[in-house]
Image (cartoon, rainbow, N blue to C red; front, side, top):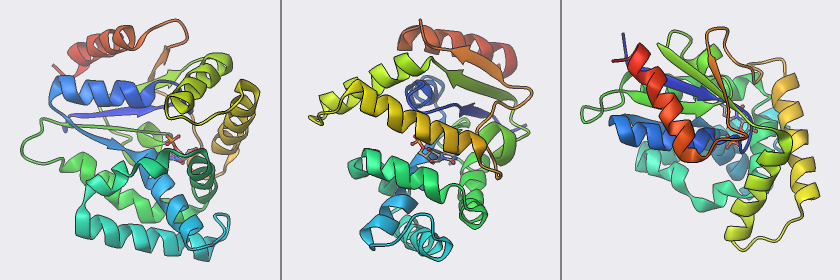
Length: 220
Ligand code: DC
């Protein structure tokens, strides 16, 4: 069986940090699938389109596919993708089934063929354990309280020189979570066989340690 670790969960739960560190520790390739949706949202906004419009969103997918074909995965490291407005646009394009279909193969191909120098793949997102890699041998679902997540996101934005209040962050985050959970296609939820880790009272090192314990039990 392919060595694939899926990590799902809401915004600012710590899933991205865990996915990156886990990939590094294990020599696995890492894909931040939220960055794919953010990149589509970004392309739609750049073109002056509406992220809720299917034709605009599909045009965004085509632009992204062309960029990925030319420059590969590094396209997803564009720091502009981290901006809140692109996160919001991402959550809107993510509701559209045809957008999810357009991004499906990119994610599955990555999971199945991470490259010779890697021993496996870690993907983080919202539907990796449920839709993208339902047969993965290890599925984690990372959560934390709303307050803690808003605090973390605020710190992250402040460190980038972006000034925001905690209540504004909390409001944006709740709106995005509600949209991600309520959508009909591939809603955010733990797979039935996922292990849930609540990171509210854990630091990044403790989360990694917990995850590595599950890795050694399932993938060793
Ligand atoms: O993980 P993130 O905050 O960067 O994701 C941005 C948005 O993209 C998120 O609000 C919903 C969408 N998304 C998704 O629908 N499915 C994924 N696998 C990853 C992200």
